[in-house]
Image (cartoon, rainbow, N blue to C red; front, side, top):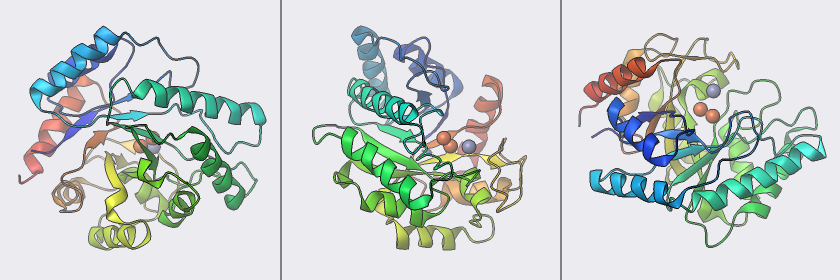
Length: 277
Ligand code: FE
Ligand code: FE
Ligand code: ZN
């Protein structure tokens, strides 16, 4: 069965997220580890986490994909912003150990004029300071649209980050369909070619999750405006190929589409219907 879910608010805790996911027909989900705009994280209630883990185990569902706050920028030119990034990242990773063996996805960062090389070395520096040999969480670099000075709009940039990280087995990649499209990868008429390119540059074994979003803009626009599935320039037929692609079909798919609960439930069941397994 297709593993798919959407972004769920973490404000009511883990068990509430699990129940909400079930309500929408999801068997995975994403959540922000703290306010997406930054700030402090809520205190974890171990009993709440335990109830969530029991629920997920009982259902036999797999990994969930946490998302770091958007404001986290490891390669800012401001020292206090980099410090917030490092502290939030380290704190999030320690909190993720309450739910062992899941994913923590983050936007690599924006170099804000310092240059791609400097940005990449600052991102790798954060990872080398925060990753721990004993952690069970896999940290995912998200493929980015290339808005402004965003790093990660090409597979090569992600490769350069990974090359500078010591604990490589703690790392993976999350492919965002809207972002790669906006960055210029033609997942509509040449999905196979893009998957092969990913494999050549990064290796398919590091691909751990997919953010499944349509795009409001044309390929290469570098805009990063998500559309509902089938309502953007990527289109439903391309998504049917995406959820059935042998290199992608077993991964967790996360919807980050502009929707309400009803809309997400519909997208989940619609994409399940398109998945021929
Ligand atoms: Fe993201
Ligand atoms: Fe995304
Ligand atoms: Zn996006």
